[in-house]
Image (cartoon, rainbow, N blue to C red; front, side, top):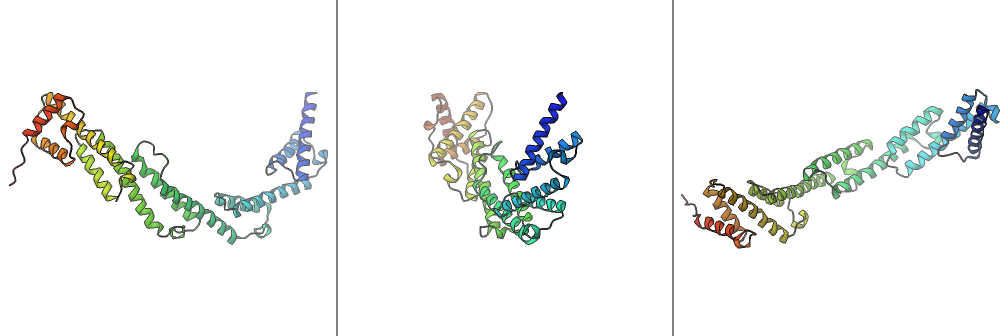
Length: 304
């Protein structure tokens, strides 16, 4: 009894699929409907005439579905679909299976090659614009930018190769030089931010980090707005940099460690260059007094 009910349900489902196929209302590309019918016939070990059809009709419906799918693929290709390369492969595989030709579908190798080219050109232009914009977010700090940029350059050249294109085909004159300049400029911006972060952390090599920041800034011909910092913020950062270093020096002196006069002299000169007064630093009164005493005791180096 249970098997009879199951067979009835499967038969009804197969008939519904057949009606949809005949009416041209198949689900998606119709492949599911065809599978249901053939699966039902196979499982019940019955012939197509049991559901009012024939092997020839099923083959004809299969071929019609394949034609519909090829027509849909061509429509997508002519709309400059980003998946053109894969779609062309699907189209040719379907033609091979059906024994049909490109001319049967109203197209040619020349048109397909041109459609792939258009698709790749559109993708390449989008990639190029994305590289101009830069990453929305760089994970793991600014050091990761190089990986981000390199991967997109590689992908750009892959897309160009797929479409048989050159950089000169992009919608931007001098794209090769633009890419080179942009990569250098973007890297300079990121280097500036990295060195600025390192300088703010203090440490023994804060001056080197600050100098690297200045070099990267001028090398990249960058303004402060390019880097994303205002003059006021930069001055505050500069003060914090030296304050941290001074605090470190004082801590070492209090711990009984000797400091070289050259280091004090460099510190004094750096404060003078930045026009920073010790009283402007956020130090305790005793610390300020100690710093002033140390700096006042530093004599200028004797020139040979």
